[in-house]
Length: 140
Image 1 (cartoon, rainbow, N blue to C red):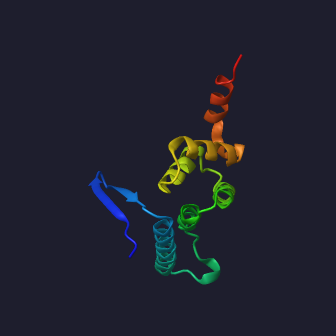
Image 2: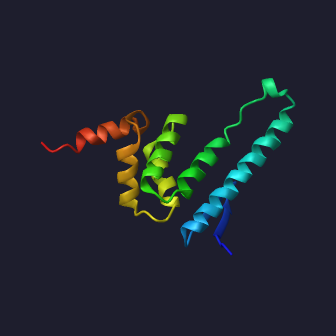
């Protein structure tokens, strides 16, 4: 049976969770569960707003499904494709956030996650600070 460990700590109205995946199958199982939760959240919120299907409010729980897609992939090319999809759908997503999503997978080092995020995130998502750091770090 797949097992995902959750270490929870509640403070200041936020929950800190630590996920530990032992195998790719556990990552895939967790991603599937997250997608099911997204569907349920979206359905529940839409039932609360009381509007017709034509005028339904759009809730942005789908970003969680996109994150699940990054987590469940096992092939680097597919991970890169999912990162590009995330960046295109959510232009305010920045490189540091993508690094954290990649680190959630637990099969990449921090340096590998950083290299992947910087190499494959569109420049528009990397932000002005990234641009400044790139200029500062250029050799003379």
